[in-house]
Length: 196
Image (cartoon, rainbow, N blue to C red; front, side, top):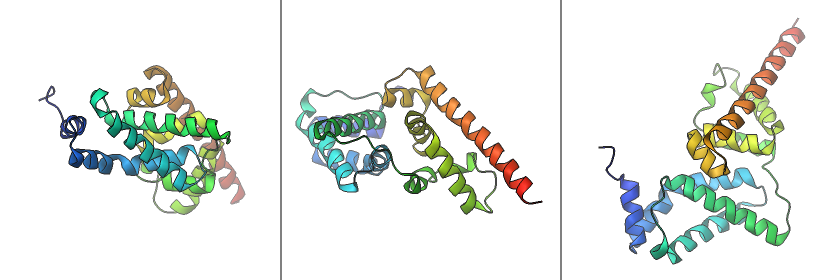
């Protein structure tokens, strides 16, 4: 039934009640996606991102009695992680460095790359091309694209993470996809003309 809590929601409620098993379960469910998302935001070091993730979970445990059940747990954790990263970067006065393009394909080509790449053969060169093109997008569009196609979030969830309304989240993804399509078409014609 639609109104019934999911296992994850039940787990979160148990965490808030002090269950260490539920706490570990929530951590296990989300740590990989949080790590991937954190590394997509900053390229300082893996250790820095992992420290930020652990800070988020430590804060949740400390404040558990005052917390409520979020509408979307993953979006909630992504926002908390992003805020923690930005807070530490400001405090340390370090630049907000987005992930370099050579590391981006690990984030991009996990689940939905097939939607953009039309065939599997020659995938290595296409992936390299697409990775370079995504790296040319403005950082906010890169982030929206990652949330949509790597994390499989809907526009409402993307809006929550980026702190914009659903329409703005949709617009960010749409504009990014339009740019990528244009660049891919241009590259296709260049390759075609170069082959004669």
